[in-house]
Image 1: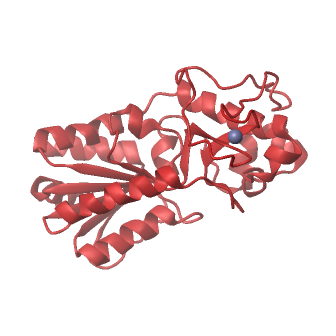
Image 2: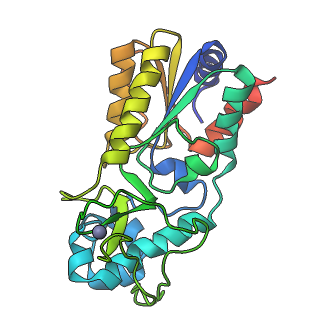
Length: 280
Ligand SMILES: [Zn+2]
């Protein structure tokens, strides 16, 4: 953990904040037991059948598999969907939600995570999922069917063979045209990602900034890595644009731009410590 001085400073910033923007990357999910896809080794440890095929994350997260091998595509995403459903958002989500309630200040989430865990932790409208969500589906053939959520949100979308990672049940289909469905996630080389919900979330965030950016805004970035740096860039850009405080919480790659604070720690560990000190 970082120096006491940095922790004290962040506690003070939270106390004085009128609004909090939370930027969350993969490191936020790791503390809920979700796999870390960083690097080839980490990804293949989580998915031995893909190691056998020699497929890296960047190669697997490509919409072409839904056309070329739908059973493998849905095996991969179906397995992740079930994993996200079965894992509980860790205590850090509750801590963040509680700060908003107790301090009576609004918060907004900007996340690259597709696990839907912020929604489950109580943020409904105040979330921008910059890479979409595995909890929503779209038509592979872009027939005009709007993005939809599965009928029963609490059950796995498909059955997956753990040895082959192939889908063994029927594949999800579009309710309008009957074509194959795919997750509403932004993949690599993804020209057909339906961004309509994302754009709506962007408009909501812009309105939130209109109301809150002139106040004492604090940005808290959690577990946002450098390999896909969307969340980091967004937090840094917002900090400069709105001339506000920012804290970067990350066990690695915690260098910060001038004027912001770094806590070298995992997300849950830092949130628990800050929470403890906040109410002392
Ligand atoms: Zn369709």
